[in-house]
Amino acid sequence: MEDLKPNNTELKFLTLAYNRFYDLYDEVMNDDYWQKDEWERFSKIKQAFAIYAELLNYEPIKHVIEQLKTARPPMESEIGSELFKFVRNVVSHFPFFNSWDSVWVSKPIINWYREGLTIDRFLKKYEGHQEVKYRFWEEKKKRMTYLKISFPEAYNDKSKIFLNEMISEKEGVKFSFILMRQIMDTQVEEVKEIKE
Image (cartoon, rainbow, N blue to C red):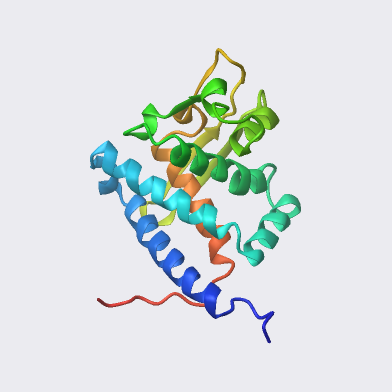
């Protein structure tokens, strides 16, 4: 019986993580959210990426990511795991910025402590990779949005890599939230509104 997923410990964590992520998701998908102060937007976006990165450690979600490699469009698995974890790591390990559009990293900054860690490995792997185009449909707004996810052309001692050049704040973040939620929803049996 101990192999049942989720076990009691996981269930406590998952409940907190899912509830907070769903609250952030609802907020970010609302047009009013994008009128808020850039620091408030950035803070909430960072929270969601951090929650999702923690959920990537949950064994059933790891299986979903593996299935995406063969069952979904090209690069969706890599976007839903490696890229989102990269974003989380950048905004967590380099907390010097006040907005999405101001975040940048460079090879010397990334490797100030030691070369070969997660961010460094990601950028080495995807340096020069072609951009990936996506679209998403917002049912409530009857709106299709097109976007691209780009990877740095160069990763060297002289290049600055801006996060907003890889993923735009509004369209890119909304797409990220949608993909994260689709992956997370594979583990949900039911969603209930909690009255406070």
